[in-house]
Amino acid sequence: MTDEEWMELALAEAWKGVGKTAPNPPVGAVIVKEGILLGAGWHRKAGLPHAEVEAISDATAKHGKAALRGATAYVTLEPCSTVGRTPACTSGLIDAGISRVVYACEDPNPAHAGAADGVLRAAGIRVTSGILREKCEIVLRPFSKVQRYGLPWVMWKCAMSLDGKITRPEGEGQWLSGEESRADVQRLRSGVDAILTSGQTVRRDNPALTIRQPELLEGRDQPWRVVVTDQPETMPAHAPLFSDQWKQRTLIRSRADREGMLRRLVTEQGVMSVMLEAGGKFSASMFYAGLVDEVVIYYAPMLCGGTIPALAGESFPKSIAVTDITIESFGSDFRLRGLVKK
Ligand code: AOF
Ligand code: ZN
Image (cartoon, rainbow, N blue to C red):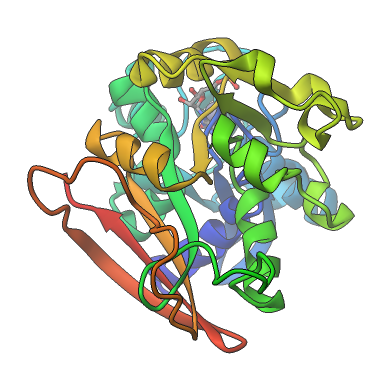
């Protein structure tokens, strides 16, 4: 197997941590010797062992300590090189007798960025970096955005008709997208730290904004539910957001200063990724402020005519380009996913 192929395995490990590790990045690692996979691991939660340590433990449990001498470690992120909540991974790799380290992305955390190579090489370890970097950067996006800008990664999720409406004609019920799309939304929710909505959406739709499948909740808490409103007194006290067993995970924030609100979610709740699930006006205002990074749109196969549009309010000074588009079918709906061009 090539370096890229082994790194794919490390990346599959990293994906297991998405939605569980904030404020730390999801990271995966595998240990390989003479073409044989000795062990694998991923970072499960901030404060718990890093991916490299998990992979070393797994390999040691399966093959014994001596087997790791001369092995190669593949890690999706540059190993950390200073003691934080956990010991430095560079020391763990050196102590295990690893002779080569291959990693995909440089750590955007300035405490570690670019520091591992020197530490590892000084211990006689060969280092290769940049293998499968672009693909591994995708899981790191929320962490990188927080490290660079102090802002969380924001994904706008919306279900709409083919003509861009989020409500159906009178008397038709509220659902646009089908069951398969809604199951996919549950998976997406399990990958984010917070869900952001507006007071108007709470009043109109009374959403729960929770993860319902127990298997998707394993290893994580419910996402924070953030309601943006200037009239908290108009919020229905009996609504699930304010009365269910996770009501302490619901926060109310004022509409003014959206960027400050997002920054506080980072510093106070440790949030790295946010799903924006709101009506047309609030959603548009988030795009307007340049705070949205990614769009996920479920198109339902219907036209709804003169009802409520997905983005509303003042028009944008210029159109917002969406790049890196992928399209996938979910039942009779299709999902378009792409990045907001900055
Ligand atoms: C790694 N492997 O699996 C992760 C890393 O507070 P600590 O000790 O958990 O350190 C957190 C920092 O370590 C985090 O900001 C990021 O730079 C790096 N995360 N590094 O070698 C891992 N999760
Ligand atoms: Zn580490």
